[in-house]
Length: 131
Image (cartoon, rainbow, N blue to C red; front, side, top):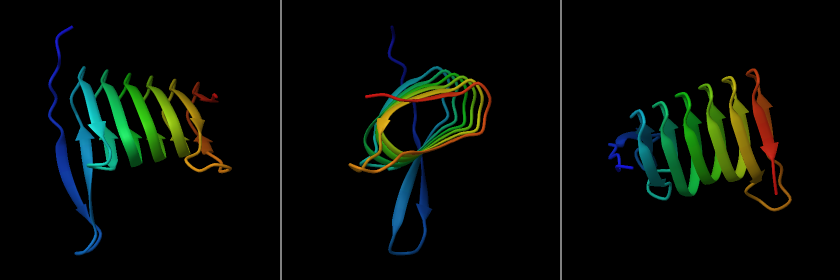
């Protein structure tokens, strides 16, 4: 399978002059991408049929595209707005699923003894906590 090179566009977000963070936006379709959230902790997936692996600790991950496959190690917040996405997350504190026919598998919260909050507003979604 040929390697698909994808371009990640960085959008600087600045809350104030002394505090800045960056966002990675994945807009490509049918791409295969790996990203370390240590470099940019906010990730938006807007493409379709893309395979994304997120390493490190992410602050926020949003999926707006459709039919994506996402593997994330750790994130504080996960939002799924598209349709037909599959997400596998080790540690996540909050999950919001607004789209339809999505599947989210997660192991638990980022802190021991904590709780993962789940909001499932779409139709025919599966949000499953595993071991």
